[in-house]
Length: 250
Image (cartoon, rainbow, N blue to C red):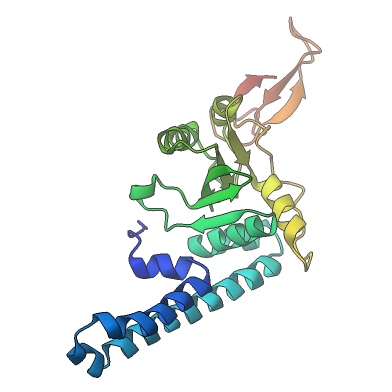
């Protein structure tokens, strides 16, 4: 599903609750002196003020829900089962607990698909959140975010995924200010900021150091050649062997 562009109301909802509350106070104080008398008598100032207060209340409730959602996560399946925006809300709350100032977006094309912007110690990090299941994050996704990072002149980029990354994606990110957070790292990050400690870390998920089979795109396993010119040497082999004979060098 495509994401719509942010409206001013969206921006206020995504901002801290006190932003809308402060605007409501300013509107109540300033608008009567600048609007026509007919508008003031007609209740326009009251409508604007209460509208901003309603947005402030909604923003506060949304923040409380994000705090609850973070504590409620029990594992990778629960993270994958979240709606895409709730998944981003959980990650944003986790980043706040790690000391970042978080600016949330709706991930539209106008911001290059960036879901979160993190600020800390003068550094700015653009973040994409991938709530996927099964399909690894390909190098094209990493390459595009790197382009956004260069275009927006920020310090670094991060992709957080509920799956892993292809070997090509890992190779492209190596040596660049790009952090790849796969499903295992994500679980550790969430568990590390939970006060409930409810999340159980899955032990059977491949990390992004495990390459995918070039033939069937399954997480590969480490094997050792038993005979031939390469006897004794280790390599990556497909778990579906002999049906699939995909290999990668170690």
